[in-house]
Image 1 (cartoon, helix red, strand yellow):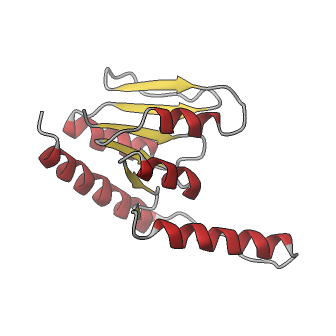
Image 2: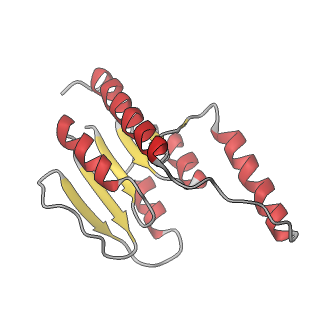
Length: 152
């Protein structure tokens, strides 16, 4: 079954996800450590997990399988979900794939080392309209591909 899991605590594209999911009639689970409002819809549910470290990530991984689309900016969570056979999209629309995840993890580690050493390194660029547009297109394309692989 195709479904979408959102790592929701800092996700800027929840509303966009709901709209695309409604068009394809795909269920969405919004996973968070704190209560988040979700629109009233039989397709949208909320999973509130404990505030323990990585509780949301652990729940997402445990509930991920082929046919699942995971929305997250967390590179380590993306890696764990890819290993479960999921499709993973960042909120800016860039897909995480098995081909690129190793480089993303390495870059993350280098940046962490630089920050730990006192270097001032910038974060990601501000989230903008182009990112939102790319996300909508990527999610749409991902759901079309999954419908071909997992016909109802």
